[in-house]
Image (cartoon, rainbow, N blue to C red; front, side):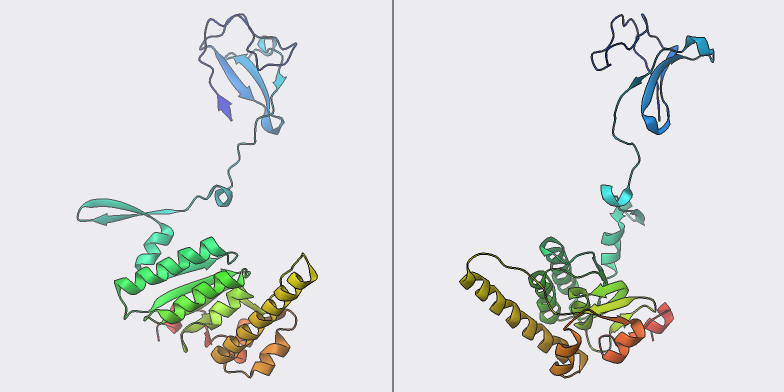
Length: 269
């Protein structure tokens, strides 16, 4: 990182510098501000390369300047030419025009609300055209996931599901809930099913209420997964007792997906 110092006529040391730092009597455009690598050391130097002209350096702990695109929420933009000129979309909004929705990351209320809103919008736009839901999720909240599930069953268009990366827990449940014959997984994706988990605290009676509730939820999830996979409820109960991992081919054999897709041409058949 390189800073150009444009101050001039400064006679006193700035207040942010530590005691003992020597500040030049005058600064002009002939001076520059440098940082020395990761140590975050800064110095005022003349433009000339003479070493004896260097002044003592001060350590100033500024935040690191490196940028993590995922942490900052940066999303690629797509520019589209229209009759009215150029129009910019973030990549997910552009894919939404192609009726593609991404369910990525933990399933929680905010994300579920966005997915539900997109499903309802695409139904209103064209109730007879399929919607494509791409899933890469470690799972998450049961109630948030059930809001997506109920909307998938409620709307008129078929919702085709595709596992990319992983579909675990509630992610696997939503993958299986796609329209029959339109549930897919990529060859190296992973699927994991298990029973719901949670915790409770408080009085014994409150803990008992929460325990009864999670047992009801587990039974309901097992019934629905049995319905969509074509397997007996007893099989689902047995296999979800602990984490049960499946490859794409194993998920197909189990009935969680209908086919494994390695090329788009196979998907379009």
